[in-house]
Amino acid sequence: MREYMKRCLGLAVLLSLGVVPVATAAECAALLNHSFGGLQDGKPQSLCQYQGKVILVVNTASFCGFTSQYEGLEKLYARLGDKGLVVLGFPSNDFGEQEPGSDKEIADFCRLSYGVEFPMLAKTTVKGRDANPFYLKLAEITGSRPKWNFHKYLINRDATQVVAYTSFTKPDDKDLLKKIDEFLK
Image (cartoon, rainbow, N blue to C red; front, top):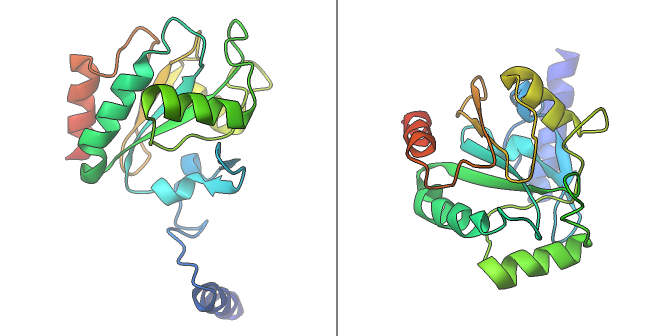
């Protein structure tokens, strides 16, 4: 009972400050229980806010042969965002040092070159032992680790299924779109 009262009091304080939590840690799927700085402002962004959405996770880079996929990712997000799809970009300099810029430089590049409006998080590591915990978990679940920029993970609404796609899978790939539609239903 005491724990319940603490949670209620904590929720009351948040609500009085105008903060409406999307999901508490107890309600958030373990896979999504991670936070990262936002690319534009560095403010912590909890992945729990995407609970109940279909999430396409992509490690990105500004100077890569696959960089033009930003255009397709933005179109996908614009077309299916209202139906529950979120594209999450994780800039990374892990492959060929093709993302050397600062978070501000990356944000400006994405916005000015490709009109990116889908959520982008701060530059991070996505491979090896130093990979962020979210990427380590995605690789563990799927058995697929990013081998280059624009590797993709698709997560279903309740974060119980994850499917991996290589960098060669374009945002308009028929198999990817079929799986997104399946997860959106």
